Image (cartoon, rainbow, N blue to C red; front, side, top):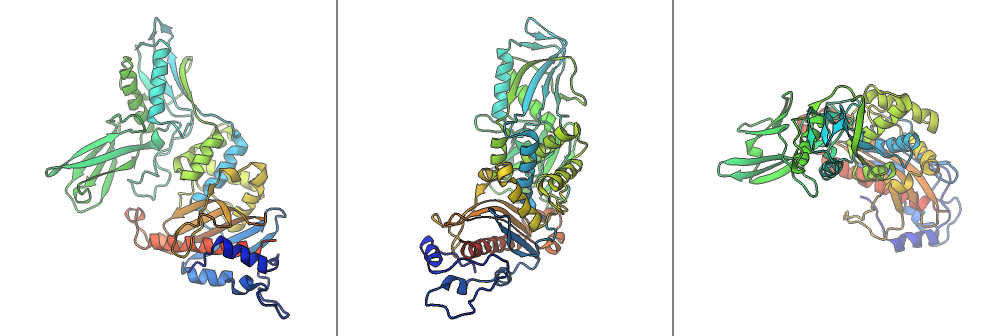
Length: 497
């Protein structure tokens, strides 16, 4: 059980006690008689071993915590064991992108014309050129279509094409995930709505009305590059087939109920963005042919319109808040391309980031296979992740971008006035949980920490289909979060100056 406590009791405990020990595993009881009330909280504080035992997680647990002002390691448990980071990896990816691209970097999506423009008519092709912007959405494509009209374009005599080759194409981030999960889309130099298509269904008699659209806040254009068919079968729940110019999906009828909706991953990002832009151009009176995908960037082209992304700092803040896998992969790839000139694959980009982390941050055992933490084979030790937090605290200003982590009481209710302020990146996969960031204590002491837990044996038993909602995973991850909170509360008492 997590011994969460109120702000009043926490501060009272600090007032009654003395400074916590500076070294890991220091004695928690005095060797001389202790006055009544002195160090009462320290006397009842659970040890790390007791906290770990109470969590009942079965797998491996590693953690490390240090004083930010001195960099001194305060307490650790298996700190050098390589652990799967899950989405905690995004904190390192954010640091990599900040240092390489800079916080003010913008990604640019462009419309270019080939063959010249005569009296508002593009003599050659109109090309939608992806610039690696992970924030591009349907509403902003509508804005781009308006810009095209405002530029005086009324006709395109050649093709309408899309190029996404600024980043290497990857059909999925992790090939061990279920086909249907929206957090595992294709990666390319162009992405719309995080490369997700909205699937909605509603019962009509004995059948279902189906829609597949690219909805955002203001618009819901339907797309034909993704098709869904309802099939009367026991299983599997979903199937996917690459149909060349289309993503073909089927879904088991028994699972649909009266109606519902979900986001499905897009495997053909260029066609997806192209079809949506074609719709908006048509609404502006500019008829475009069906989009084609270019293998090479257009040459001798004239820019006619462009969209800039928000600055990278804002993109990363939102990525760390919402933990968007596609954003992590695209900004990581963009950083590697900046360093290398060209990047061959997602894995090659992750290896470049690993090398940067070792050289720039002094990490020893980081081994990521992607930038989001979705892949099973990525590893980092708690000690290395803590070192990374210490290194980027001032160097890159990461802390303000991290999400506030709420502390909870024994009934799992958020304690709004909890005396510990935690800013950290969470990471969650089935039977994997991580947390890394900073803790501000009431007396001004600041700690940097990393906590990882993983039952890889249990995770390895799961089939691809089971990975969306496996039995027991939610309860396991809940216990892992209680472990994290219990350790943080321990440190809050033990290391207040």
